[in-house]
Amino acid sequence: MTAPTMTGIAAIKGQPAVEVHDLGIRYDLRLTRRTTLKGSLAGMFRRDSSDTDFWAIRHLTFSLAQGESLAVIGPNGAGKSTLLLALAGVLQPSEGDIVTHGRVSTLLTLGAGFEMELTGRDNIDLVGAFLGIDARQMAELTPTIIEFAEIGPFIDAPVKTYSSGMRARLGFSIATATTPDILLLDEVLGTGDQTFRARSQARVRELVDRAKAIVLVTHDLTFVGEFCNRAILLEKGQIIREGPPGEIVDLYRQRVIQHKLLAEEGAKRFASVPKADQPLVNSR
Amino acid sequence: MTGQTSDAITPPRRGATGRGPVSLVRSGVTEIFERRRLTRYLVGAELKQTHADTVFGQLWWIFDPLLQMAVYFVLVVIIFNRPTPAYPLFIFVAILPWKWFTASINEAMLSVTGRQNLIRQIQFPKLILPTAAVTAATMSFLFGLIALAIVYLFYLDRVSIWLICLPVIAGVQFVFTLALGILFSALNAFFRDIQNVLGHVLRLLFYLSPALYSLSTIEKDHPTAAAILAFNPFAVLFESYRAVTWGTSPPNTIGLALLLGFSLVLLTVAIYLFKRVEPTFARIL
Image 1 (tube, helix red, strand yellow):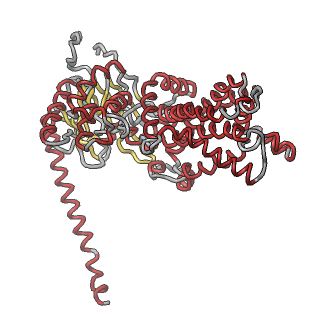
Image 2 (cartoon, helix red, strand yellow):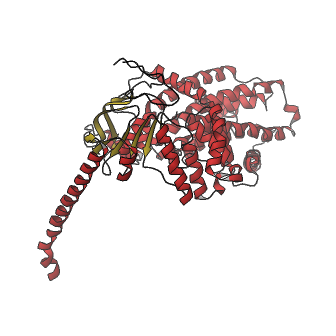
């Protein structure tokens, strides 16, 4: 197999972009609760860790080739965001390993990392430095970031004077300024007023086109078919099924309905229990 | 598969990282040097933030120590009636470094918890946060030296060649402070209680340090107490600052050298411990 020479940002089809093997992420509930010293000292003496550990995801194995875009869907608490954070390198695997080929980047929550007292321009530098983008590249990107954010002369005013819309636009503009090799998306972003929303969605689409591989976590199932060519259904930290987006979305919908029916049945049963006691209460 | 791999492959991120202490400390030090630009921006942000709502802004680093000096002067010289020659200068060379120390520790302590939003979203070397906090306070301290110059205007006869030792003493204090700042920033992520206790601990440490008095006055009545107090890092620092300014004499070189050695060890331990717990920040914050 001879690999074609890379031209520009074109992806080499078939080359792995992300390899995840037997990944597990564990949260220690003793530490996760906003503990005070007293609480955690008590916890330290409990040697049995089974009731204090929580596996957000476990035994995940999958890989993503260049040119592919993967949707991760599932109910709340399935571990979707945890998986994304692990791929981004924010969370370290408690078990197993992750190999990524190329620069991984996730879109920051808009305005994360902003310092209110600094000007918009200084904040561009600051967030760029947090993201690890070097000074030269940042200098090249800054004019486009400012232009896209549409905040005009306010760029040299402190961010605390911005409206929330301006802050969101600047945040979005910085977050999408560079194209990563592997793009991680937590929901498809839409910000600001109508016109900016249209532009921001166009920009995300542009990023999606340019990235070599994409992982998208979303509740909005309409995007899955549009953006992705593969999907994973995640439930309680486990992969239920992996396959073409249409099939997985259908499966997810079925399971949601099933769960709802089960839940309603459970609620009915629960509601019927106190009825037996009611006469007692009423007689008083 | 024989496919070529891109040159940007990250080493596999594995569970249960078994990295040794040496490699952790080395990577911590490398991070601090490689991300200087981030530190610089954070220092700039912190300096703007600290005095943003005040009319005089940064000038408070000149006024505040001078006002403290006035308060202690009233307390010690007038109320307790313990006159010491050139007492304003005598206490000022302890008050200013102490303000630097407490500002550093307080800001460093909140530096990690204050950035939890970002820590939960992107991967960056968290060691930069306490480092930037301590550096920002150091900048303010350097600015506050203007106040020392003002005090000196009244005691020009106390200017001596030994003043050239000031940067050395301050350098030792910087290493010591950075080590503690890194430790407290990590500890506070786990135990917020520290925020409540620290103020009191620092005040006690201040009174146990020869700031308002000198070790030699204690030595007369309580030789053992003075011997114990001499182990306090701030006994070494304050007495050295005072020697080269107020006393126009050389600093306690042996004490400083020992303190520097201790501080470097402490800094290494602090970086190691910080790097050990760094991966858990994103989970617990």
